Image (cartoon, rainbow, N blue to C red; front, side):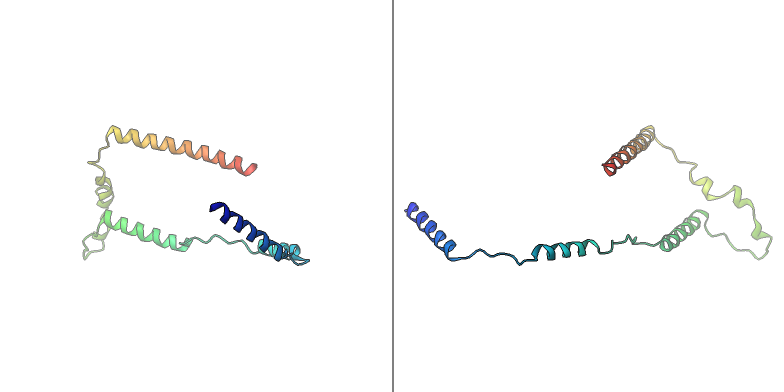
Length: 137
């Protein structure tokens, strides 16, 4: 039964192929396709525009530095005399110096940071050479 179905389908395919004619493209088909390809390649290149502009980064940096200064130095109590405003003890007794006085680092963390830095330098050197060689070929 399967052989009869295969023969029937084969005969049907041959009959359909005899009745149809082969379509040919127009005379200037290749030229029109190539003109469209060159037209697409002549389009302007997309320019890189960062999400945050330089002015935006400057504003963000200023705000960040102002917040860090406010958190570290704090607000000093105001006084009525202008000479009290020139209190120079702020230079020797400030929160920045006292911030790291009780900070200790374990040896494991020190080794991990040094190893991470070393491996980062090796990878940057390796990837730079890899991409330079790829661009030369």
